[in-house]
Amino acid sequence: MTQLVFIIPKDELEQTIRKVMNEQNQSKPVIDISEKMDRKQAAKFLGVSYTTMYNWLKDGILKEHGHARKKYFLRSELIESMQNNG
Image (cartoon, rainbow, N blue to C red; front, side, top):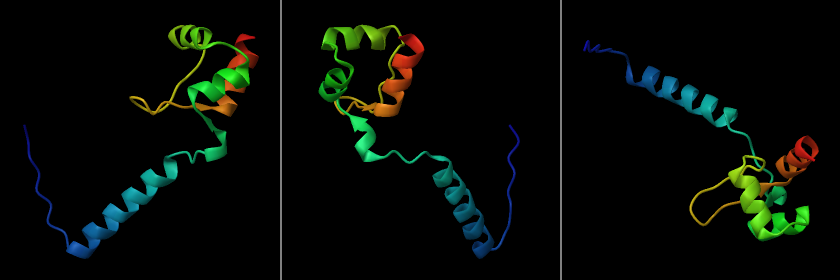
C-alpha cells in the first residue's frame, strides 16, 4: 500500500474541505415535510390495508424511507408507484 503525504497551507485545506462539503450538501435532495407520510397515512392515502402495503414493499412496488421505527413514504413516490403498477 502506497501512502502519500501532502503539505498544503491550513487555509487552503479549509477551503477545499468547505468546497467538498458544500457540493455534498447541494447534491442531497430536499424533502418537503408535507410530502412525508407515515405508514398509516400512506395506507389511507392509497386506500389499502397494512397487509397490502407490506406485500407491496416486499415485492418492490413501494419504497420506504427512514430507519428502524421512523419509516415514512413520499407522496410523489406513492403516486408514481400506482401509475406505474396500476
